[in-house]
Length: 288
Image (cartoon, rainbow, N blue to C red; front, side):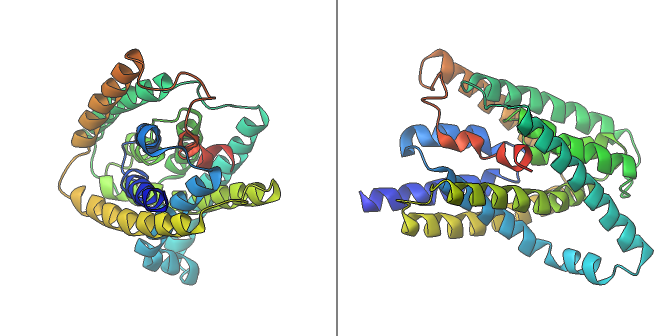
């Protein structure tokens, strides 16, 4: 059983690491994975997500240091200000949504539809962005919309936080895929740290840390960090010369597969049966 638990932790860490920042939705993938690998605690889901966030922080540490230490430069102050505005919008709206008592979907069907609709949206966004000059600047308008987009992605698990924010930025005027992706990822760092920290403190307060398998937890964290680092580095190189169309097609196919599994009765139909991992992609928005 111990070996099986470790293998499951490794596999879930790999899935989280690959899907958290690629625009394909970690939620849908973790839901399917946990049908065979078993449910995991909220603490486990928080920890593997933290590993993915750490990986992105490492990748962008030079950029973050430039913004922090070079604040005297108007260009850096302006960019940092836009990151802060986007983060604050997400935090405020996220808290409002949480106070309203928003709950996760009762079954996998909404997530599957979000995957399909998100895929179609990505294709449209790429087409629309291609008609614009490849501007690399991030306007205040883009920053505001990205902040709102993070909340929308949390309210509709399956849309993908990274995908939604990247394409909102592109449609709002940032024609460069690289510039839109960088801003989306940089906004996601404080947002997801804050959300994960909040949830972890809440879990500790509620006594949810009792009985945790710390070995599996540690392994999953390390695996998630390493795999996310590789995935994001690959993505950043890929988008230099390629569109996101392949991800959009994958989402549509995967969403259709998920709908088929629901129709055939292979997926849970209620929250009582749904795996805890369904909250993974939602948590960064609703709790911040």
